[in-house]
Image 1 (tube, helix red, strand yellow):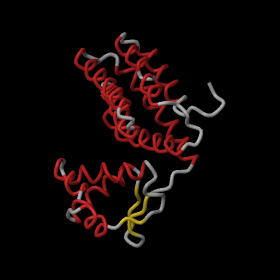
Image 2 (cartoon, rainbow, N blue to C red):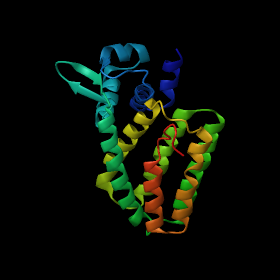
Image 3 (cartoon, one colour):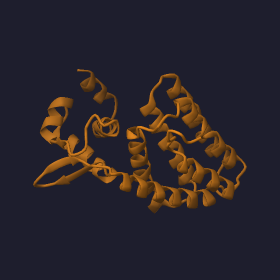
Length: 216
C-alpha cells in the first residue's frame, strides 16, 4: 500500500524509475534478476506502459538490459567495467571543469551551495542513498556549466555506476559526514573561478571515491 500511495506524488514513470534504480544500486535487485512488466505493474499498482517507460530509462542508465528472448535483466557490474567508467568520468568531468568556471554565475553558486546543504540534511537523516542522489545532482550541476551537452548523459551513466560500485565495495569505510564534506573544496574552486584548480580537485575527488582499508 505504501508504494501505491507514493506513486501518486510523482509522475508514475519517474517514481518507478527512481524506485527501481534505488533497488538496483543497493543490490536489493541483484545482477541478472529478471524483471517483468506485468509483475512490476501488479506490485506497484500502475500500468505496464508506465513500467515499460521506466525500464527503457533504466536501460539508458545501463542498469538493465532488455532483449526480446530473455526479457529484462539487471546488469552485472564487473570491477573492470567500474574502473573504466571511473576513468571515463574523470576525463569528462575534468575537461568540463576547465570550461565551467567561465560561465558560473552567482545564481549557479547559490544552487551548488544549496545542494551541499541538502547533503548535510541527508547525513542528519542517515540516508546514504539520498546523499548519493544529491551528489549526482551536485556534479552534474557543475558540469552543465561547461555547455558540453552531448557528454552529459555519458557522465551521468558513469556517475551512476561509480556509486553502484562504491556501495558494493567492502573496503569503503568513509562516514557520511566525511563524504559530504569532501565537496567543500570543489565549491571553493568554483567560487574562485579557478579552472585548473577545479579540475585538479575534481580529479582527486574521483581518484579517492573509495576509501580502501589501509589507505589514508
